[in-house]
Length: 259
Image (cartoon, rainbow, N blue to C red; front, side):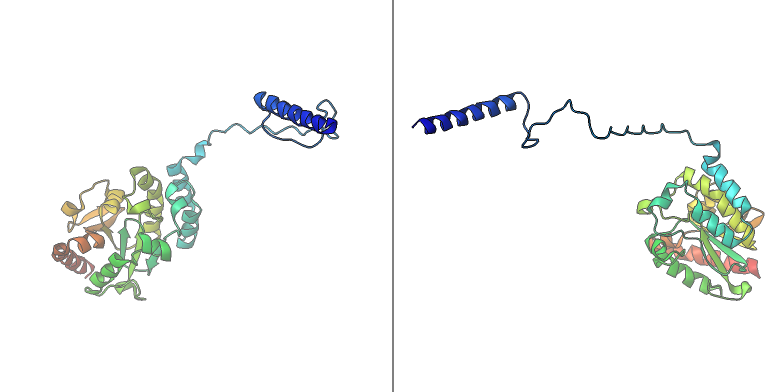
């Protein structure tokens, strides 16, 4: 009986010690043996390096200024493509699969400037390859022009204001257009087409500073020293088939100008 009583007393004492420790805030077992907190460590802990304070961006990181310098330095379409692909100051690039540069014959008399890549264009890395792109090809084929033509007289060269797809196919913001405009201007200068066709509000605004494609379409003007013809975007024509009659009139006007 004496041994049983002693064991019971030890158990109750241990339980009481545990309850006291929990009450004191010790709710986790550290180890089986005692630890001497005053003993010197075998190796002094290494000091944690302080995080560097954020540095202000240099003046040269202004997106428009950087784009202007990069575009001016591009002496060919290949170097311009590389410059655009290396441009990291536009947030759209982070969410895009591909940098969509251009398609068609760079010797073409007609340059088509669109807005931005859609989902299909982002996947393939080429402009106007979705439903709107297929309609565009059919439209221009009616006046004898094609992006696949090796003949400059019957060829098309196609590019966009934005080389990266905006999320959800939203309209590009004014700041995004401003920082990509130097690349657009340099692109047009290097291709040096006879005629520019802008399809939709964004390219119209980029080259002329005005909006209202439904009012502007079909009315010839000038931009960057080139004849400019505004047209409605093929995506608009897919939503509004009745507007195809006006698009046909614009194509005939382009055909007459080229002749």
